[in-house]
Image (cartoon, rainbow, N blue to C red; front, side, top):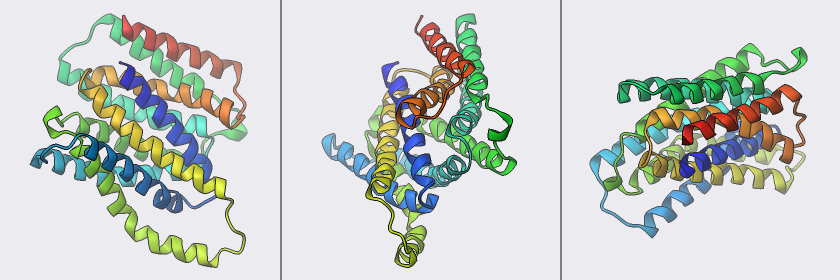
Length: 277
């Protein structure tokens, strides 16, 4: 289950880097910088372990990439508008609900410990989402975050359809699909940069590139995790990612974390520990 935990960690870092850089750049600009970095991760993995492409692996990867590009764009827009912790929680809860529904249907049934662990992880989402009224998520941001969560959950379900025989082709095609989705934005970004009076600090661009790196690594850990666990188990870690985001936001961005949010981090850890039993 280590790969699933690393996938959640990479996803949380992607949200923090992408959301923070989207507050200084347009989300399309962040995507233009991040997507080639993610594609480079996919290319390196493909070259490190070359295999013959399969029709199913290429097709699933390309479809997941094109739709995933929309999901990433929505995610960066939502993170740019609202508090990173609650927005991440909304996206993760939506995605985890979709993944767990499909995973439980696929498995047929789950044991009481699994249900307890899943309940604790969703409870962690609720507690991490608690904010003061003035920091509540706006309705427009909520709708974008929900859409990003649905697309993110669908992405994991599509990746579950791949097999080890596909090698890293699905991941490479995912990243290629995101790049293809990003291309129309590239010209707009170049024009915006030409007209911008105040140059963007270099560290903002590095943060956008870091988001792409974490996105690519997250995809890698997701594929490795799905070779060892099913969707129902993966949903536990997907639901626990907001707790990681809240903790990382506190450490990296100095975002304040309340006592009840700290409790949510602990509850998520308990849920993951039960999942190991």
